[in-house]
Amino acid sequence: MSATMLQGIFQGVLQSVLVAWSEVWWIVLPLVTFFIFWDFWLVYLHIRFVKAISWKLLEVKIPKNVLKTPKAMEQIFAAAHAPYSYGILKFDKYWKGKEESWMAFELIARAGESHFYMRLPKEMRHNMEAAVYGQYPEAEIMEVDDYLDHFPEVLPNQEIDVSGFEEILRHENYLPIRTYLEFEDPTEERRLDTIAPIMEIMAKLRDDEQLWYQLVVRPTGEDFKKEGEKKINQIIGTESKNKSGGLFADFGLGVTLGEVVRAPFEHPGSAVKKKEEAAKTMRFLITPGEKDMTEAIEEKISKIAFEATPRFLYVTKQGSPDPGVIAAIHGFIRQFSTQNLNSLRPDGATTTASYSVRGMFKDTRIRWRKRAIYESYRHISPGEKKSVLNIEELASIYHFPSAAVSTTELEKIPSRRGSPPSGIPTIED
Image 1 (cartoon, helix red, strand yellow):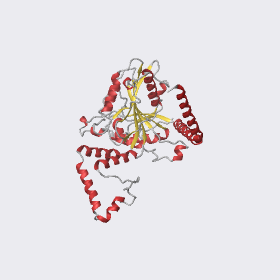
Image 2 (tube, one colour; image 1 turned 90 degrees about the vertical axis):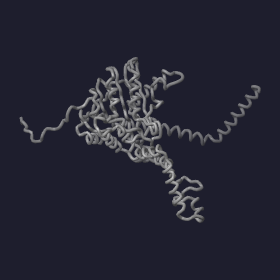
Image 3 (cartoon, rainbow, N blue to C red; image 1 turned 90 degrees about the horizontal axis):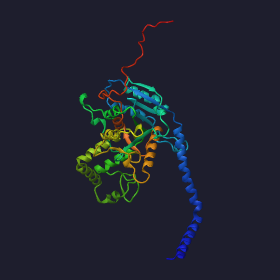
Image 4 (cartoon, rainbow, N blue to C red; image 1 turned 135 degrees about the vertical axis):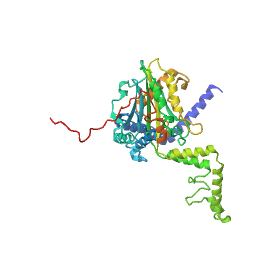
């Protein structure tokens, strides 16, 4: 084919495109412009909402000999669910920019000590303080200066290096991870504290190292519950009513079109009996593994839940990171894994490990990932991928340690501070 013929074909195609465009541009162009504007509008609303939040950083100190189990932390997370709106009105969402509030629980190791923090909007302060005091009456809660103010706005730089990752669920949100209940024992000496491994990691850090653990939580609704119920129905063989249409759909009368057609030819109770017998047969035929799965799903969806983002940052001097620290963090998270249900895994899009980045400009891309996860930590940003954990799961991966955690680096208050007796004599000037 000659160049002249190719040129003619190209000109013909171009002319056809221009003619088609001249006929539809007045429809396509406004639509494209609207969608572009809509994306910018949503970004603007989100930025405006975030900037309006007045964050407070509260440090929580607990007594040395506290005997509480993570069950107490469940109640604290339940209190954090209080601001949930159960559905924001569209006008408030898309005009006023209202969003569900979120907060962060943090565990920081620095200067030879470990500190527990709650980072929350000021409107939630009294609610969360009451929740902590309700479970730990002898605790101390105080507003403190933000430790992030001692670090640059952007990291890494020539002196300080950061590395880290976010954790997400490996499977569907309705499948649970292993929780603290599986680590408990009636005998106190044999009881295991799931927070102990990361406390031991922090106890062994060098003076020029810091480890930051941030758990960002935002209340969520019942979508994951509906997904779990659907999965249970699939396992045990009970079909949910199909209201989406179709030839044999349920029309809201409790029967399908197929049942109406067959009604004159069979006994009225035979169809119901067949369904009940089929359901009993399916329940009998499910395997022990499927039975365990349905019970685990039912247990998870029975409790309120959050969209959760566990995030880890390892801060050290340039050129002196210890690979064992990151490996130990993975070990801490892996204790909550199960082979038949669910587990937490690093989000490949956020991890700064060299093996997670392939292709050209590898060093530059790793540096940008480090900067991105540091900024996400500073801005208390929820993760892009939504992993739903209920309050039992959250209390398993983050709670105040019990007396079984004996590391000396944890800063605890030695005794309860109370007010003086009401009848004590006073000296007047």
